[in-house]
Image 1 (tube, rainbow, N blue to C red):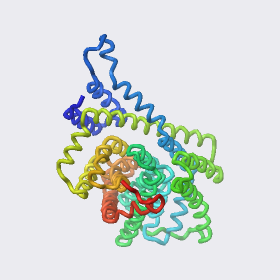
Image 2 (image 1 turned 30 degrees about the horizontal axis):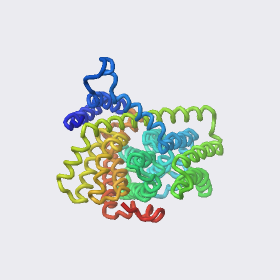
Image 3 (image 1 turned 135 degrees about the horizontal axis):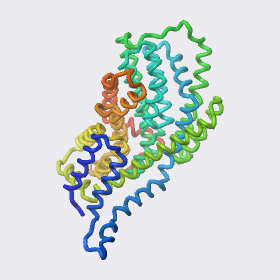
Amino acid sequence: MTNPEVAILMLSLFIVLVLLGFPIAFTLLAMGTAFGYYAYYTEGSVTVFSEIFDNQIFYLVNQNTYSVMENDTLVAIPLFLFMGYVVERANIVNRLFSSLNMAARNLPGSMAIAALLTCAVFSTASGIVGAVVTLMGLLAYPAMADANYRKDFAAGVICAGGTLGILIPPSIMLIVYAAIAELSPLRLYAAAVIPGLLLAGLYIVYVIIRVWINPAIAPKPDMKDAPSIGRIWFNLITSFVPLTLLIMLVLGSILGGLATPAEAAAMGAMGGLVLAVLYRSLSWVKVKESVFLTAKSTAMVCWLFVGSWTFASVFSYLGGHDIIEHWVLAMELKPWQFLVMAQLIIFLLGWPLEWSEILIIFVPIFLPMLDTFGVNPYFFAMLVALNLQTSFLTPPMAMSAYYLKGVLKNKIELMTIFRGIMPYLGIVIFTMVMMYAFPGIALWLPDVLFGEYVQ
């Protein structure tokens, strides 16, 4: 039953319910089922029982659930999560932050730089923004507070650094994007390497310049009790190198075509256990905690996918995708205008929604139009990936700020965190502009590794 008006009502009601605080995954599933029941309802069945219960929406929900569970690409998600939780529970991140802090001690804002580097490495291993921001909020924020760093500055560093994991490979978000857009996860990973490193680098440059201009926001540390240079390098090598090598091995095996994302994730999970053993931090209790957290996070992600795909299927069946596509095409936009409009819509959707709903519900609206406007789908994917960083950094629904507020509680005000993350929001937008001006930032590496992409 094509009924675009009902589709628009469905979408509007969903956004209102999310803003009211209803759980996103189950709101998607409930609304998809309710509106789908209306869309697939047929009168005149043989019996009253069959007229009520013989509805295709129940088959659709069942099939979506089965599709999520059998998707080979999504198998990598729990394995990458397990690797991240094992690394976290083994206290490797604590060692890494301490070592980087001492190694960067002569740079302006050394502790903030160490926090950003630690966030980049750990978020790459974990891929879950909430886990990174929460852990660094417990680990790095108190250290910066004790060093008299300004609260908003310290909070902004942690919130911005924690979001890097959804962009820098091996990224769970890119695995999901590959499954939705039917793109090669290998090319997506290759396309994301330079933009991710560029964004992390710009964050560090901003910190250095900001502290150089105003040293009072990040006083230099007291070096009276600092360890020797030899000891610093020893700590750095033993903490930074093993974890970095593990991540490079996982990513290299994917980009080199030696392993699928799922196989590389399994190797990473095993590598995390090996690192925990080498650091003598592995225990049965920590393994159980890692397994439990992996199962919990995976279940949350899977239900988000089931709900989102059910919602998106019904929305499309009612004609929602078609009416939006016709509206966009009727505007006769130029390619750059289409890109700006699409990214602006995704940016605004990042206020109330999480990245998974944006990817599964709204990105498929734009994907069929890419050929019409002559846009490289991998270039578009990198613009979206950068844009989704803003969904964690844009008030009033900046989730990274709420994660940090949740662990710090009364130690900091939410408005202070918002004030601290605004410069990084500007840096993300600046990076998107740079990538639009120089598409090679995203396309050079995949073209070198896999050959030039032909649409």
